[in-house]
Image 1 (tube, helix red, strand yellow):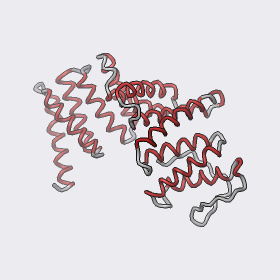
Image 2 (tube, one colour):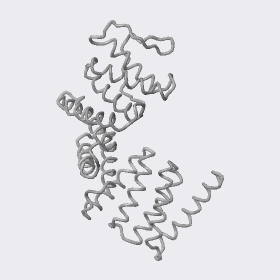
Image 3 (cartoon, one colour):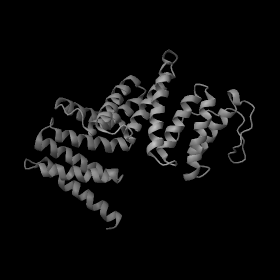
Length: 288
């Protein structure tokens, strides 16, 4: 089926199902079919197509089972995931919070899906700069995952990575410098899992390396930052063009690290275009 025909077909399904979901005859199979379809489209990154179907699934679940049912919580999470993946955090947050409240009330406190909700809420509050709130959610997500997954599972590495970013951000404030040490410990744990479970050219490994390097860089610990930036660059050079935003950023950070601290005055064997970076070029934006 051609893409434009498929798009029309799926939208038609949503339009047909929505009135059905609102009718008194809504059944359990209705919302389950809709939610499954929305999840399938979500996994395929077809967010615009998934959205109306997920909305219809939520209406159907509320009609069939009530606004406080675990089925409704599931549909709320699906809809929130779609908004979250489009970076529409103001729409995702209240849906996640509703789903979380229902699951907590039902004492469904240790399932992997709940950990995903907690982790996403943590990342939303991290983006808002509300670090204490972010850590609360992230720590709860990590606790569930450590109880339900192997200790070297990549998902645990992701939790550790995000918590490390949060502590590192908190450490930027003079009164919370001790948070840098906590961030370093978490970065080391995340990196150890990444190195054990991913290929040498893996993007997640490069991401953790670059964030860990930047954590050292902003503290002026250039000797520690340089080898991590170099490893990041080695990975990115295998999969990205020399002029990509990520490669350019890492080169700039590496150049500035070489020209700062104990590396000051050293020649840097890296060029970007025709320019050799001999002055500090600092950016807080990590283009991943």
